Structure formats: structure tokens, C-alpha cells
Length: 91
Image 1 (cartoon, one colour):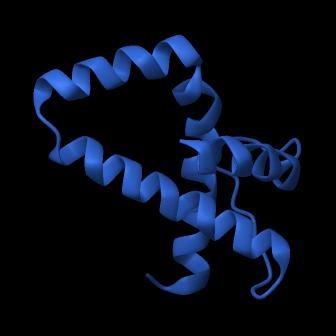
Image 2 (tube, one colour):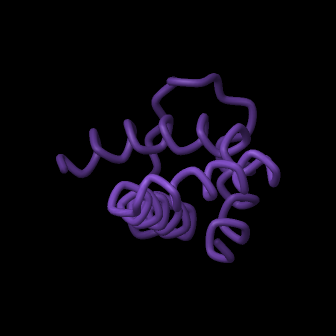
């Protein structure tokens, strides 16, 4: 979660005042691209662990995320960036 906390601030600055679902092209091989890809891959890893976990662990994790306001703040950033990243990389 430390990587998410660190990169979340940078991604928030990169996105600025963009609306949810609005695609954004980020040029490859620049710092913004590296931070964005790192942020998305970290979320992908976290969500993979979440899916593989038992229902009890998922329940505890959801409760902790709600208490720290991780999910509401990050969800819009993740989905907006993920859509843009998939379009530019073809993955």
C-alpha cells in the first residue's frame, strides 16, 4: 500500500480536473508514464491478491479500505487511467 500512497498523489496531479471516464493520452518514456503504469500495475497486483483471498480476508480488507478512504479516492483514477493505458498499449 505504500507504493499506492506514494504514486496516488502524483497520479492525482497528472489527472488534474479530468472527469471520470475521460480518456487521457500519456506519452511513453516520460516520468508521468512511468508513475502511471506503476500505479496501475500496483492496483492490478493488489486486486489479484484480493480476488485470490478468502471471503473473510476480503471482508476485513474492504472494511479497512473504507476506513482509510482508499477506494472512493482511487477508483475514479484507476478506471480512467486503465482505459487509457489499455488503448495506448494494446493490452
